[in-house]
Amino acid sequence: PQVKERGALLYLSSIFRVVILFSGIIALGAWCFPVIMLSPSPSNPAAFHFHVDQDAVALKAWAMQNDSPLVPPPRALHPGLVLVAEWAWANMDKEQSEHYQRLQTATGEASLGLLYSYPAHATHITVSTLSSFKKPDAPRAGGLSPEADAAFVAAWGDALAGALGNENMAPFELEAYKIELSAGAAFLHFRDPTDSFGRLRALVASVRDTDPELATFDDLLGGRVREAVHLPDIVHSSYARFVASSCDSPQPFVPVRASAGDKPPTAMPDTTIGDTSGNSGSVDGTTLKSRFDAAASRFRPFTVRVTGLTLANECSPYMHQGLEEGTARFFPLQAPSAVSSTGP
Image (cartoon, rainbow, N blue to C red; front, side, top):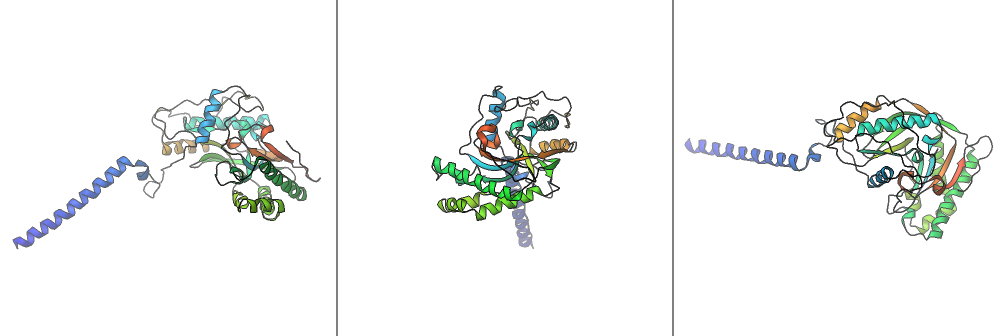
């Protein structure tokens, strides 16, 4: 009996040591790798993690250091090519400008320095990305001479001009109805009651698949032209990106004043849609998301009228280049007459 008791005690002692060992490993993991322990799960549904955007970091440094509209923004590593609706919509009229300024103020106060919001001249609503400035395998990232690159941009412009002329699309209205914070950006959601963006994206897909000149470039670049075309499944306007991973000393909101040679910045209004209380303490991802959601609950919908599309040469990240440099082709929407296009 004594031998059996001793064996049982040794067995229980072994189990106890294993439990202690695993508890120590878990505790060490929580101390060394807090992000892993905070990953979203049923027991931790509020956890929120985001990605610092180095292009946005550079843009914020440019914007905060330069008051002159003559100072150019940072350049992209290679240019992108995007089809956007109503580029600089926040600069189009006084009412839209005031809506956007309130949105910037609310976002800035909620984020306490973690987010950089675009100046008004960079606002846009993406129809399609045709060549990303971020991706190393994008058509404009390499493999084309300067002359061939210009011909590639012109090929997209000509193909879209012909397709839009056949579509004969009139100006239309979008309703900005909510804001959302993702791991990569803050953005506006739009309602599109006429499904105009659906029609435009179907048009881009058709051009991608059928235009002979684009097919030639696709063959030259090993299929990269067709693969590069991205058609979002939402109608949105990104307007802010992360520039810091945490904020132990919360920063007061300072509005961005720099522009890229378009309309001069205007004074910020006194009214906001954000909650400016509780500006003390460390700010992490979960805290930021909570503060942003509080601001989002006070968002006031507004309308943006789309009167034109721009095939944009995105030579600075996130459409921060000036209108003249960035306009590869402009397509005014004007029904019932056929749509024409003009160069830069």
